[in-house]
Amino acid sequence: MRARQKTWNRSELLVVFRLYCRTPFGRLHHRNPEIIELARLIGRTPSAVSMKACNCASLDPQLKARNISALGNVSKADSTLWEDFMFDSESIAHDAEAEYSALTGKEAEDYTPEFGGILSVGGDPASPDIPRISDVLSESTEKDALVKVRRVQSFFRTSVLISYDYRCALTGLSIPELLNASHIIPWSVDEKRRADPRNGICLNALHDRAFDRGLISFDENLRVVVSSQIKSTEVCAIHRDQLLRLAGKPLHLPDRFQPEDDALEYHRNNIFRP
Image (cartoon, rainbow, N blue to C red; front, side, top):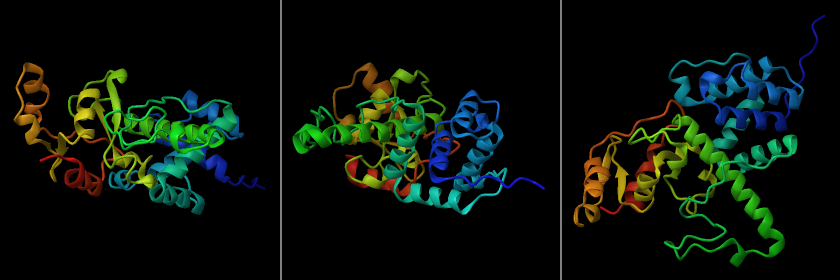
């Protein structure tokens, strides 16, 4: 008699979903060392983990359009987790990072403070209305809040950069130290979309700053529009080559987690300075 398969629990699904979001699609196979290690940690086979990760891909509308199908049966729990992430990415991202931390004893990696509009440790001097964590939370809750911020930031940053293959969506620059995961709708505006990779674009540090400050945006055809403030200032070589000449340049889209139209529309209408 064939042994009954062990049911996947929520904790296992969360860490596999985390793996899916931070692994290039072509590496979701049982020979990937990260999949082998995760399988060992949760007591599954590498093949089972890779199949479950590929099931996540089959739930992604953009990959569905490319006829990416599941390698196994997509369970109700798989679908529910995906739907939960689409509804409240911040909570799922935090829970996934927390489960990974509990398994490995390691905390979130890739923490970077560059996110505009964030309730950050030091605040953003360019945005005086953004408070410091220490100004609004007691000492006992400040640590927990900081851990959550780091987990969510790590999830978002890695998911976005992996989706764009660690290349700037405008220039193709592929030096990780010079790349940022730019929020389209700012961190402070929509809590539930803070960790949603579809609310992000991989940009180099200069263009990330310009996008964050509303000096560039993207039109309905995903081409760069440049603010009149840039056009009216004194021109130097960098200004001309890296900003003015961006106008009309197409955004290079990732294979998955492509920017959502409504997020880009929000940026055009509320962040961009025409």
